[in-house]
Length: 136
Image (cartoon, rainbow, N blue to C red; front, side):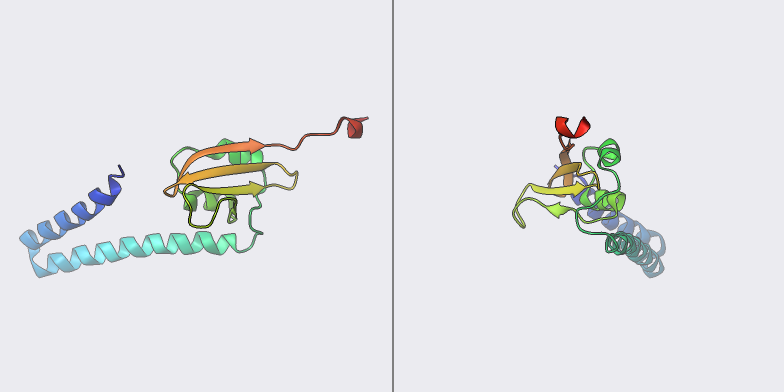
């Protein structure tokens, strides 16, 4: 269960009640200003990440090996997009769970990430097989 869905609204209500009991309307105005600022900071971060991602082709990454090393279970899709500075190439059906995205580098290595409810659950690095004929 995701406690953030419960904890954040409860904390906002508790702050509002506490502000009312301490300062009444000026306290409510202060809490409302803080909440609006918090929402604007998150909105600005999302826009910044997406603006950086517009400069790269969909599903590209500088190094798939480095991306594989940096990934951690439980990070959200926006965090992975910020790391790669590119939108992932969707491999699963649209709006289906789990969502599967792929990022490929110039050496044709790719990382396939699986997101369940927006959180990274698993990922796999695949490197191209080198032909034995080309090494001779």
